[in-house]
Length: 340
Ligand code: KG4
Ligand code: ZN
Image 1: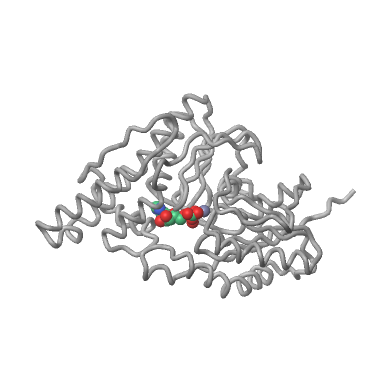
Image 2: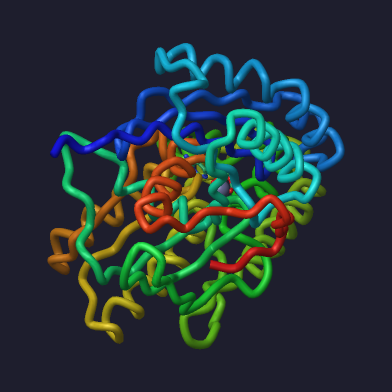
């Protein structure tokens, strides 16, 4: 019997990117994103402005995703949306749009956990690399999260540790803001660090128990270093920009790497799967690749297009939920603090 394909339209609007994707089974046909430039002027995401920009962007982004995929909305099998975690106003725009479309087309609605999606993006069809086998250590490193997760199956995920304060991406962004870099500063720090000396400045590695991490101490140490030195030399940032970027990047990466090593050792798992915006960082990609050689780990790093927020990752989670007939309900509200 011929297998029937599913066509899923996925919508992601948890923070400041409005994204839509169309998947045919586990294959991505289109993956469109409208970034919200407006937040650059404020040095961070302004929730109220994010919701308004989602309202403006959502219809064109969905239309673009359908058009690139060459799919008419009448051909869709289901509509997926991000239920949380994220900013409540942003989530409401995506969820209301998804619910309305699902009602009008009379097709199933599927709700997706954004953090599960950052991990399951590795199951998107990829001719170059097979997906990871279970169990594995999942690591989500983004602007809002820093988590170590034991992943035993698609939906059997247990959080082992998390950040006690700032997320790793948040630390990148706040340190970058202090240096006058645009939001989000992570990619800029990554670039500037390439011609800097990572040993030029030293920052303390916090001692945190178990598999938890902390980033606020190192962030404060960085901010204090700048404030102290700028009094003596007003050009301190300009004179040391590359070294400052390389040194802070090395420390931020080292903090999470220490915990990844500890977790693989105590769980006796040698498969590490990374997800989230900071997975785009070239230093962490290099350290992980080196680690895979020296420790014989199997490392899974997503293609760059699936690291920062995107709707293809929402679509792949929905594909596995549809297979299990795990559908969403119209009465379900968004959950800004949805846990994994
Ligand atoms: O996953 P994501 O797009 O959104 C959240 O769910 O938070 O992650 C955004 C975060 C930002 O903090 C951004 O600065 C960081 O990912 N980021 C990077 C790089 N690219 C994005 N951080 C360091 N190096 C990069 N290349
Ligand atoms: Zn994210």
